[in-house]
Image (cartoon, rainbow, N blue to C red; front, top):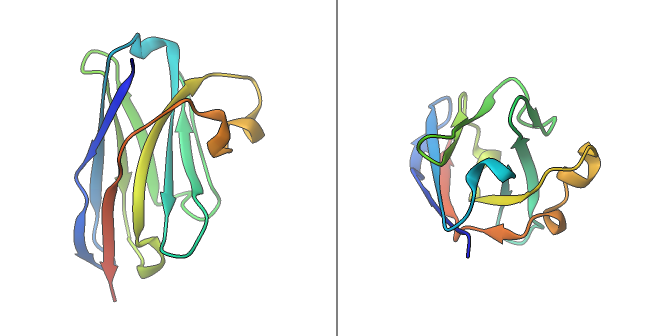
Amino acid sequence: QVHLVESGGGLVQAGDSLRLSCQFSGGNFNSYTLGWFRQAPGKEREFVGTINWSAAHYADSVKGRFAIARDNDKKTTYLRMNDLKPEDTALYFCAAGIWVPDSEALGRASHYDYWGQGTQVTVSS
């Protein structure tokens, strides 16, 4: 059974940077594409970005500020967040799913089979 654990969240000020980590276990890491999503209070879960084995894709709201990486040896994916804004405040989740050649599908939470418990990011103004 695949298990995902996020870490690295916290309280930061606007303009700061933060790096989230997501540790994968219980399966073949190399078989999965990895997604990051976030959910603010009272809002739906929102796509942040996804990474397969060669490329990452991002939501327009974070493009140019956030970067996703994966370390296959450590079975870990990272979300580097720069120039954080108060509107980035949310519970951040990583997810694992099967890669498909459909960027729209990869942007949907329903595509992913496994989820972590989330890590809270709060950005003060």
